[in-house]
Length: 447
View 1: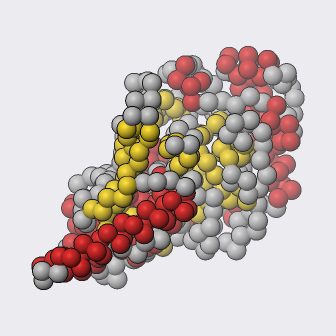
View 2 (view 1 turned 90 degrees about the vertical axis):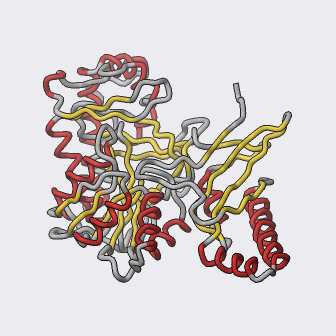
View 3 (view 1 turned 90 degrees about the horizontal axis):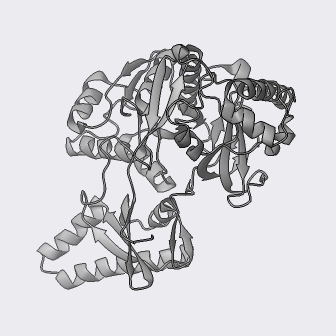
C-alpha cells in the first residue's frame, strides 16, 4: 500500500514545483529566524527574498555537524523555546550530544514520514509492529512508535535488549512486522532458532531495519532466518530521525526519499560539487518544512548515489542506494580506502561464513595491519567438529585453512587489501543488543 498516494506519486514536474516553493520559503524562514543562517546566506550572496531555484542550490554553503555542536544546545533553533514539544539527541564525539528539537508540527511530520516508510516496507493498518529500536534520546524507538500508530498498527514497544523476553513477546503476540537494527534482527533470529522456532512457525512477515550500514548478505540472512522480506529504513536525527527514506517491498532496490519534505543531493566528498545520478558521493539533505530545526544542505557524511528511474511500486520519489559507509567510517590500510560494508559484501561470497564479523586494525612499526574476525556458519562448524571428534583432525584443519585462504584471496582480489582472517565459532562474533553495532576496532595511534 501507499500511505499518501496523492503526494508519493506526484508527477515529476509538480514535485519539482513543490520543492522549489518550499525551498524558497525555508530560505526566507531561516534567514529571518536563525542568526547563523542569516550571516551564512548573506556572506554567500543569497538574499532573503530570492526564490533560490533548485538549480542554484549549490550556491548555498553546506551545514555540517560541527555547526550544530558549536551552537549547542539551542543556537540554531528557529522558534521560541516555548514552542518546542520534544527534544532528542544523537551521540557526539566531544562529550556533548547533538541536540535536535521538534515543534508539534514537526512531530506530526515525523509520524507521517515514518508511516510512509512502514507502508513501503510492507506494513498495513491492523498489523502489529514489534518495535525493537531503543526508546529514549535516540530517535529510533519513539519515531517508529509514532509512525506505526499513524499507519494504524498496534505497536509493541519492546525497545532494545532483553532478547529472551523479546522472543517471548514475538511468540505470544504474533506481530506481522518488526523494526530493529539489522544486527539485532540477526540476534533475535538466532534466539528464535535456539528455542526451536523455525522461520515458518513465527508470525513475522516483514522487517524494517536500519540505523547502521549493512550488506546484501545480511539481507539474505535476515530474510532466511526470520522468514521475512526486510527493507532498509534511513534517517538521521538532525534531519528528522528515521523516516527520511525506505526501500519499497516491491523492488528492494534503493530507498525512496520523501522528497516533498527532504531535498536530496549527492556531492563529491572532496570538492563538494554536485554529482549526476549513479555517481557515488556524500548525501546532502535540505529540510523543506521543518519548523524548530530547519537545515540547509546538511552534510550527512553518508556515501550513496541517487536514481530517478521509474519504480514498479508507483512512487515517483528518487531512490538512494544502500549506504556504503560514512566518510568518517572509512579506514585507510596501506593506501587502500575501505568501508566495513565492502568487507561484508566479500565475506558474503564465502558460503562457510556468516554475516557476523569485525575488523581489528593495528600498526606494526610503520605498517598498518587489518584482521578480519568472522564467524563460520553453524552448518560448517558442525561438519568440522564432527571431523575432529572422529580423529580426522588433519582433514578438519585442511578445510579450515582452505576457507581462510579463499577468504584472504577474495579480499585481496576484490578490495586490494592483505588481511589476516580469523575464523570464529558461532556465537563468538559481535552481537547487537538493540543498539548500533560497531564493526571497527582501531588500535592505531593516529595522532
